[in-house]
Image 1: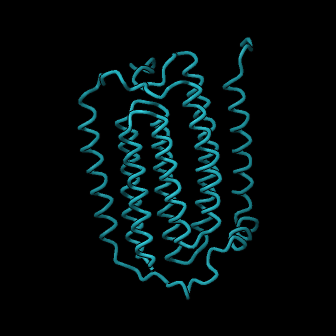
Image 2: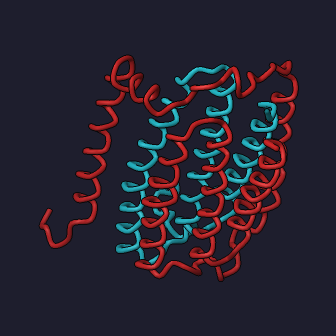
Image 3: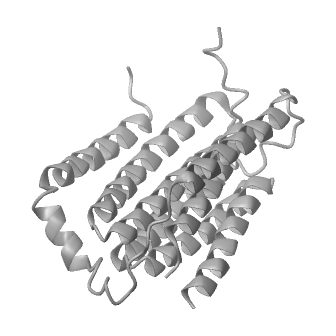
Length: 168
Length: 100
């Protein structure tokens, strides 16, 4: 049952990623990426991490994709690639390099000896949001605080980058 | 239970697609989306390993990655808007002023 769900979801994820690469229109790319993010969220749920499932849907599929769509439509940058490519040789080279990367990653992944995954009875209670939250506020408190500072810096950076009418 | 290796292979495939997007596409926003795809592929591998070893630390790392990715998207898109305002283009080939 898990395997069937995994296969369906991974096919959807791969389709979303591939279609994002192929479509010429940036809005369509964003929507296919949204499909891919949703599929990955379902995979998180299959891997017993309901908290990350929620975060993936709200932060990635919600906030980040809205930001992307907003910027695409604000700039009117849907179709910047209609002109022919000036670096025509770059595409086959990129394809070859990508295939090489996939081959290397696949070989490395397949060389590792298979480890038995604990079944759901052994993993009962694993990945509860309470467990994750307790870890965040005890052992990983300092990184947690640092992400708060990073978000603050991001807010200030966005405001500074996009202010108009200020004399330098 | 699905073996971890399947998740790792899927993650590798998604990561490769992200790399191809960065290398092939010329629309700066789509290049950015491909970077997000790569981050997601890495997150998937982390969660799969966390499930295999029954350690929540992997999920904590993914939480931090998502937070930093949100900050990175906000700043990156602000940079793109600033570039668009001065250059009137979102094509990465046109923004080559620093080329030697």
